[in-house]
Length: 56
Image 1: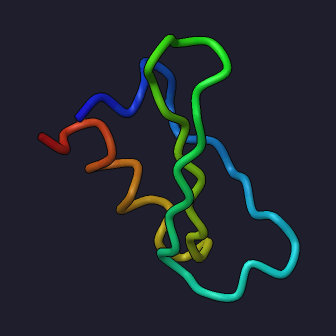
Image 2: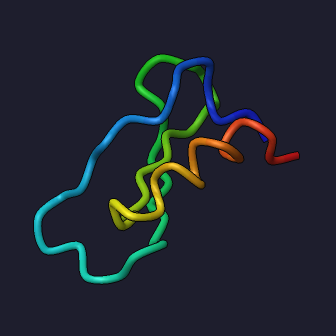
């Protein structure tokens, strides 16, 4: 799984009630690709940054 070339960025839509909820949306730039939005608590960001690009 390729999660992109850039580092994760902070994004939390208002009223997203569940940490870990992942929302896949069609990519605006990559044909056939997807974008991923995920609610994550601030205290878990460091751990997520350590593993996010190694998911296979």
